[in-house]
Length: 47
Image (cartoon, rainbow, N blue to C red; front, side, top):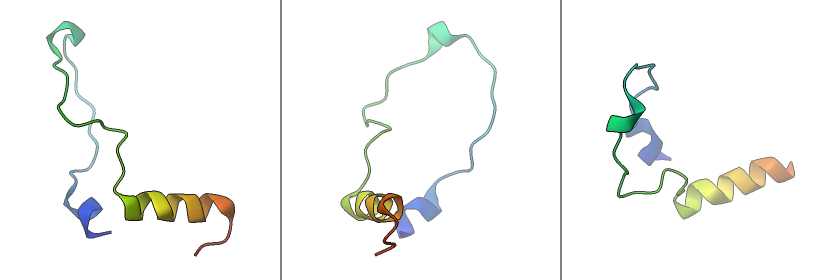
């Protein structure tokens, strides 16, 4: 879980959406350990 400790906190910004650029990394990607933990938490087992 050390990977998430390096993320900056979310912040609100204003701008023109036409100036946005696509990212090289998919924001929905989760490392395997985070995905496993999410599945465990969702199933109610906690393990």
